Image 1 (cartoon, rainbow, N blue to C red):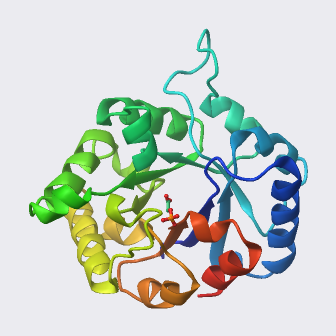
Image 2: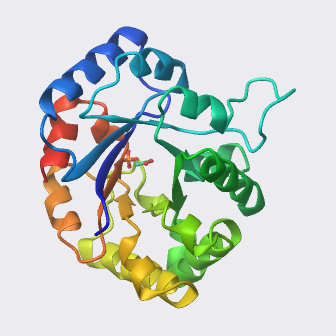
Length: 249
Ligand code: PGA
């Protein structure tokens, strides 16, 4: 049975004091949630080391990014092997903000996915279409291409260790959420692609999260859809109350 996961993407928010206090509050208020559901946070990487010294059984750590290289002369980068040393369990790959601002493309993301898996860090692979792509009727094709470019080269054994996050770009940080029908339609499509590329058993094992203006008011309905296994939460993960409400949903 696949994992149900709620992951908070803090992006470049929170000063050190705020980050410490949010982490403490999440640890305290998520007791007993795992293993039924997994609670994950992706703070700015500068806080990972401190949090990893205070690791909790309730909240798992994710990085927001890692290098596509193993190690060496890459100023400013962090490697997958450094993440695993800190007890980081997951790493976001291919978030639309990095695709847009850092110009990350499918071939680069593929290298990151490979390195993370080699280091036993679970990639949370993000995909999703822009508003223009949806309006042109290309949403399905765009998502399929993103999966083909960066994760569908993996073997059966590898792909089951990937989490997919479908995040329509037009819903991220905009307050516009995909309706539960719209989200389910693409999630079902993604699961079918996995079924045809791999097998029904493998498709059934992979968690597919929804992201994009997910909040306490819409989380329960989104998460009740057959192929939505949780959420990747941006804005609403920055307050303990709203994040915990989403986790409860
Ligand atoms: P949002 O962000 O919840 O603020 O829309 C989601 C994300 O970027 O992962």
